Image (cartoon, rainbow, N blue to C red):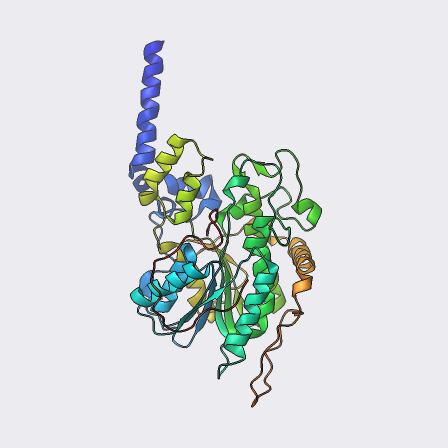
Length: 430
């Protein structure tokens, strides 16, 4: 009996070793089988799941693009996916506005882009903290002042990447949600989704007629509460025992990410099938960014599991900047393909989250979001030069019209390297 137990334990160890520390399962198609038959939402989650599947978009295709004359604004741009998006856009000629919570980290990211990306356009920075509605509105006002009220011609936004995000590691083992300090809204919901809803509403008049709006969602959008997403404050802030965290999945984080997909589909409906503006969301996949190490070092995983995961990240996760490529695809995909209101996984594979197809839920979420930010939706004031009286483009959504002031434009002599993820120590991009 003892011998049998030892043999079973040895066999399990061998199997685990093969699974965790070799590429054999990948080459045998094990992970692709799991993806296709057992875990369909895992499409493109990691290279192992993508093995043998042609990329829907490649770096070669992207680097054939010429975005000279285009302006991109990227939230959470100082590291992770946001930095990779910004760096890559600069490489193909776009002018990029880095929007970050920490001005110094934003400046460091700008310096890195200027020194390594050989940008053709301008690289500038602005400050935004999506944990604050006032800060979000202040950034939108600063944009209007710096880019629309002074410059001739006005600078409209062609590519709006709503990327800033947070994953509260300390919330994994609690029953009640954490709230933002100023606005007292569940932190994931506000930082990842709601402030981006507000930012879009405020910046909508300053978008170009063929603008692309691209939120960073996540495969975690499949792991939300039973009701998918809250549409009232009582539900959003429930404190039921075991309700906030279930089976190790951060359901509040998943809720904020499925909210982005619901919002994308609602906005696409509002813009209409003939709109030249496009809105689509994407999941970067599991990417080896600084947030991964923060999660592993948080103590929420057993030390052994964390060490194994850390060991395998370099070979199992998408490497920077591959996580940004699907977002870049959505920025560059030809308009004639008619891609709008959709959600994609690496590499440029469309994925449907059934929970996001509920049009009533889309409508209810929009109404709930508008009510939560109504005090910050007044029209943005636009400084008008003495010689002109031009008004911004009329909003296509029922506009009523965001963090601190604008930083710098063009080149500078700041030194440093990419900072941590854009919101705070416990945040993430994917």
